[in-house]
Image (cartoon, rainbow over all chains, first blue to last red; front, top):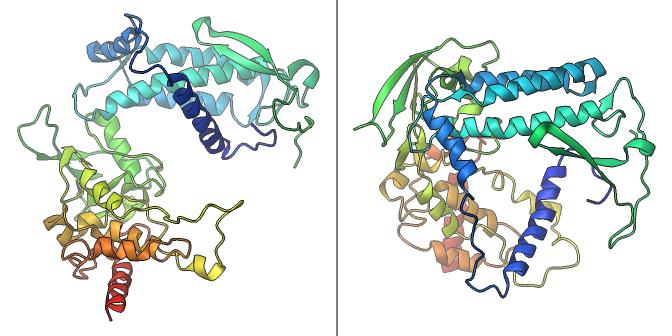
Amino acid sequence: MHGANRLGTNSLLDLVVFGKSAGDHVVESLRGLGRARPELPKDAADRTLARLARLEGQKSGEQVHEVRLSMQRTMQEHCGVFRFPDMLEAGVRKIKEVQNRCRHTEIKDKSKVFNTARIEALELENTIEVAVATMISAEARKESRGAHDRADFHERDDANWMKHSLFYSEGHRLEYKRVHTKPLSVEMFQPKKRTF
Amino acid sequence: MRFTIYRYDPDRDEKPYMQDYDVPLEPTDKMLLDALVRVKTHDDTLAFRRSCREGVCGSDAININGKNGLACVTKVADLKEPVVLRPLPGLPIIRDLIVDMTQFFAQYHSVKPYLINDEPPPETERLQSPEDRAELEGLYECILCACCSTSCPSFWWNPDKFVGPAGLLQAYRFIADSRDQATSERLDNLEDPYRLFRCHSIMNCVDVCPKSLNPTRAIGKIKDLMVKRMV
């Protein structure tokens, strides 16, 4: 955002800045549209409803808290603060296994009122997506940068890795996007190594 | 550890009941919230609110062995068994330990809990002297968990008319703020037999506040200002 971010509180700053930007954009793009709204696709809600129906119909399976603990332990052990190539490789295999288990969780609570068991099951399905994206992107990135600290590639490598990782859920596909170094509206800070 | 927990799911139950649990805790289950999360691994139908798990968000306020508090900052070791858990008293119950906070937040919003200052904002912050800032100590820290208002007999009687300790603490927080210009409007807003003066200094609010704040003292200061402006 301003090139001098540190990890803690980035999310708050992002929320404030991009939240306002997104809100302004929505207001601007709705202006003049009146009450007319484009038709939603007929199947707009299908994927979401299918997730709910799967949980509703699941009569046996693993408990959400068990799978969640496996996800947490896998990320902690294989994709922690200090990262090692063999751990990352094993981590990719393990986290994919955990992802498969997420498709067979069962909740006993089928109530329509404030169902926190259902919320936790859905949250697990959401967080496993991020965990898989993190593990696969980290394993592929053969350098150290910011919080990504690899024992086998200990230095930052701008020549090969000055690029964004783009993870696609379908097929666990990884692509890269170049970093824009041209300032859009403000003066640019020169990229440099982060030191303490 | 043994628990007796208030259960009610309007989707399933005719009426509320107390359910007993006997659940082995892990050595890492230090706080009551850890224990509740552990109970939920045995019975996922038990519903309660929780978020930050460190006394900052105010979501897991419940009645613990008869006293309101936050599950996440209550040590398991300090509790007498069986631990009796009920929803916060005096508010409508949505399910199990979850109450409907609408009334509580309606009273909070009624005191306009934000800075009112009609002067155009300066280039940087609205500055305050260290002495003026010190006036806000013990007022701004409220996390709106509702432990205080739901322990207050006056709030139980008149939740629609009495602002309650949480709302009144916030009213005074802005009255005491050197940058706020709406003191007389704020006092007018509370000049009423119910909104402020239903407080009879019972001090349950002070007894239960998990952040060790003192709403009764703040209410006393508002009453002082009311008297001063009349004489």
